[in-house]
Length: 183
Image (cartoon, rainbow, N blue to C red; front, side):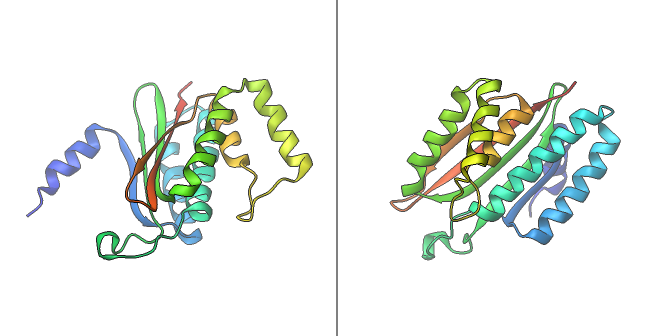
């Protein structure tokens, strides 16, 4: 039997506010946001930090809901279609939002390039890039023009941390983390 108490203790010691694995739906997003809002009310005194964490979490959840690639099922990947993972935790210096989802290998290079471009910009350059995309109305078939990642970088003031781990010839697992400093 699983040692649930040890798992509980590890989660408590690592200040995990919420962890989830499964399909992200709009109803789930609403529930997660309510849970985190309640926990932030108890944990965080600075309203500006609370708002940043909340807004960044909204963007991360929308990315998971809109941009998770459906995977073709085979026996090695059963029950993983549109599956994602979300972990929110804190330490003495920051809140951390970590997501993970499957992505088609053909989408890895463009996404990596986009994230690198965002990370290479200054705060002012990010603001200009955001305005440029809005003004040019350059939106993808899934509804965004990369604005979510720009918004996350702008609101957090931090670099976007990410990794692509190959799973097989068709898919990789995209891990994303953003750290929101405490005031």
